[in-house]
Image (cartoon, rainbow, N blue to C red; front, side, top):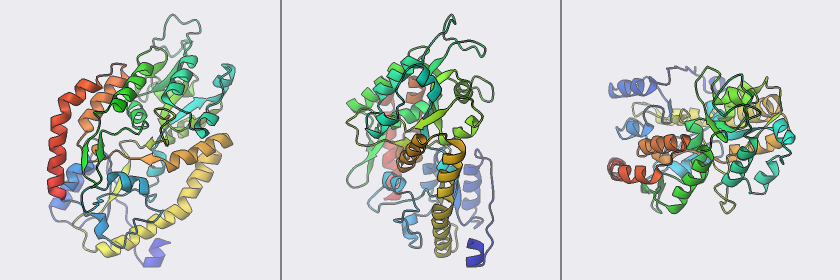
Length: 393
């Protein structure tokens, strides 16, 4: 439709996710106008912020043909990631790339197993705003069972069942679901380190209480071998799993009925749910070498609009709702997840990536070291933020 309406040919050029950053840098620094727009991984290996501060991308607010205030552009992401006095936006999220619809983190649970354990299905808790860390811990403890096994040491043929399975990225997402951020913004859109709060430390403590207990939590990511959180859940060896929406693909042949939920809130006082996206999420940028930003803006806006209008409903209402999910309650949960997507500003710009990695690793191992880790990295993070803002503002 776009090609016919605007009399052009669209050409997609693909690179391995680990090579994109260097490809972009080399091409743009050489002054080559090879690409009109570029999808970059959010913060896979290196952050997009490193490319922004090298002046490789345009401020999208300076391309009026992009109607960024329209619903076909993700407003949550813009609100989270606009920085500086000019409300600068160097990247955007929309549905042109369908991966953006597949990468929010959520909770999967085995409905059949819950019924066998005489547990109430958590859908009502979510709708009543009562799906919290404490409830997740309660369900995970109820799901951990030895079933005659000597202990909870992983054994593919063993009888033990875990309460919750995931891996480090999932635990990092669980912390973000509390609404706490490593970096936040003040009233002037200036970023600052915000992890030094009692609530942040308390959220880490609550998560660590779950992950430190053997059997209640099992971290596993030996892909593609059986010791992987998706396979553990698929094979009925875990009651709950933290996974991305796309994990539903690997569960299509599961014998049990499964459901999905948004990640839990820190407590009932939290005003909303948060659904963070995975680090490989592709975000849209326009390189400074683009010779026709107005034309590009028109085309991208039209693509985003048509994707929002024609592709997204099919993905959620047909692909996810009818082909992958198995009940109306999960479809209702899917809508909550879709509407609560967030993206971490600190990692987008690379300020807090090292801190994030260290804290999530500690929590994943049941060894919370948030306080000492933040104290150790605080100065470097604040220095990095100041340097970025000098370049942008």
